[in-house]
Length: 198
Image (tube, rainbow, N blue to C red; front, side, top):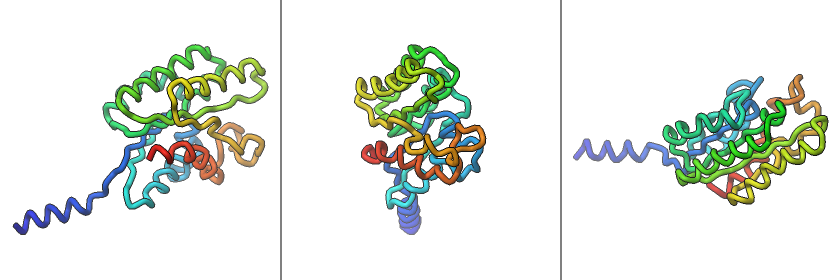
């Protein structure tokens, strides 16, 4: 009886996870140029851990990754982590490299459908390109995200870096990756779409 009581007490001390959140992104989510505890995904985990019901946040983002890379690893990630929610934040490198937008759309679509087949809710995070890539390409690039969000009825973040794009001080020397001081703002951009799914 004593051992049973100890077992029950031990189970009561284990935090209950309401959801497992998997973030699949590139350097903007991997925290390029930042300490491990400074990126927006880490800040998300801290914010969620303030709740009595804990959420498990897994950052599967890789610097330099493209949507093709996301396709190649999403199956294993879903099998390993069995997420409740998947935040897809890929495509920036496809755009910066001038890769085929048709392929980018197809890749994102594959990631989305695989997540949905596993009953995971999806947050799609959009990106925008600098104007020097030309209006036709930049507009078509943005449209990929909006079309997919509408077609699959996804929670949608139109632009991960919303509100930072005109502030040079918000970025590291490469003018591509946000500094630590604005990671909270990046998180807020994602939070509006993510919170209702929790």
